[in-house]
Length: 232
Image 1 (tube, rainbow, N blue to C red):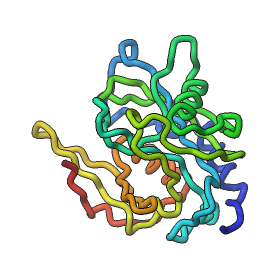
Image 2 (tube, rainbow, N blue to C red):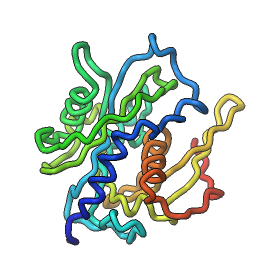
Image 3 (tube, rainbow, N blue to C red):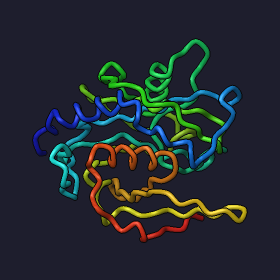
C-alpha cells in the first residue's frame, strides 16, 4: 500500500464543494423537471483512502495517490429506475431532512458505512435529473475513518465497490457513451473500471459529476473523445 494521498487532494475537493461556479452550467444542455414539482434527492460523492488496493494506473496529478478511491455502487437490475447503472450512494430527501442528512442516511442504508467517519466537505448545486423527475444535490465527502462496506439490500444494489481515482483517470479506460432513444442521440463521458472480476461502466449522471470534478480539479488526462461506446 502506498502512503495516504497528500492533503492537497482533500483540500482541493473541499474547495470544489464550496465553489459556486462548479456545475453552474449543468442544466443548460440537459433541461430539467419543473423546480416546484421535481422531488429533491441527494447523493454522497465520497473520496478517501478506502482500501489497501492500489490503482493499476499512475495518475499524472500529484494529488491523486494510487490508493485514493471514490465509493460507488451498481444498482440492482430489477429496479424500475436506472436499473443496473453505477451510481453514488443516495436517494430521495425525506420530509424534515436536509440534503446532507439524506445523503449520509442513504449511504448508510445502501453500503453499511459508518457515517460518523465521513467528513462532509460541502454541498454542490442542485442538479436536474429529468429521467426520474428529481432534483439531486451532490454532497461531497472525505472518508476520514473508513469502515467496511458492502451490499445491504440486494433488491436495491448488486455491488458496492471502491473505484481507484487514478484508474478512472486512465485514458485507456475513458470512452464517450452514446445513447439513442426515439430518434435522439445523447453523448456523454464514460469510465470503464474493474473491481476484481467485475467490469463496470460508469456513465450518465454519475460519470458527468466525476468528469466535471476531474476537469475542474485539473486531474483529467488527455483521452480520445472519439472512442465511442454504444449503449443498448
